[in-house]
Length: 271
Image 1 (cartoon, rainbow, N blue to C red):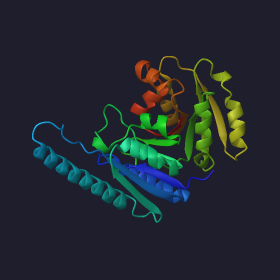
Image 2 (cartoon, helix red, strand yellow):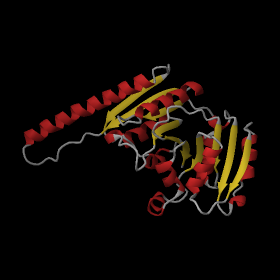
Image 3 (cartoon, rainbow, N blue to C red):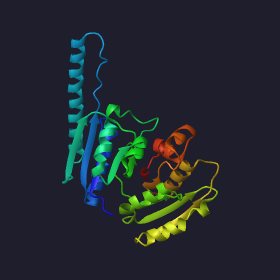
Image 4 (cartoon, rainbow, N blue to C red):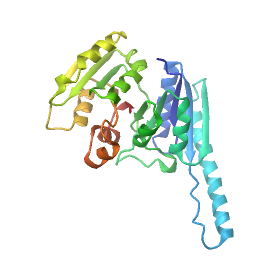
């Protein structure tokens, strides 16, 4: 499997420049095209009262939307200047819907983490969790402040689910280039999740793999995965997303939700 088009979500938030730099570096190393994508909704007035005033307000908002899209394009061109094969796509409208539509031509989407303490990406930001459920493509979630991904040490957070199997397959372009890959299984039934079979599968792709059973009931599975990844000095975690329903995860908690909000490492996720 080859990644031929890396697509990055571009907004005007504080973390956008780092995210574009990271995506640009990946595209260069993978020999891929880099596509920047931005959508900007037009936040028009409620059509009541003075019609002429409403029209003027709408026209002003349209101009502001075009200015924001031009600023996003300038940011993309600046941070991805070294990439030879690149493209830019933008439109007024929902940034999530526009990115999801453009994702039909992408092999990998790069989006920002949106945790409670993260800066506001503004109206052009997209939710990684919602995107995961809609696009049918692997998503690389990047925390603020990370502008480079070496992916030489990778942790696969394994659970024997459809989503995790999809994530391992989608991550093969990274796994086959890594120096070390650690398969980590969390929970009291960790030894029943088939980690050794996955290790054998990756070995058939010439990946050097070790397996680890993590059983620490005093902390959450998400915390245990991220703690283990930091201990192994990994900078990429691969995992399946939303093995339970997304609604259940956001109400009761779950690994996907917790990692999307708190990860300090890049995470490649598939649903």
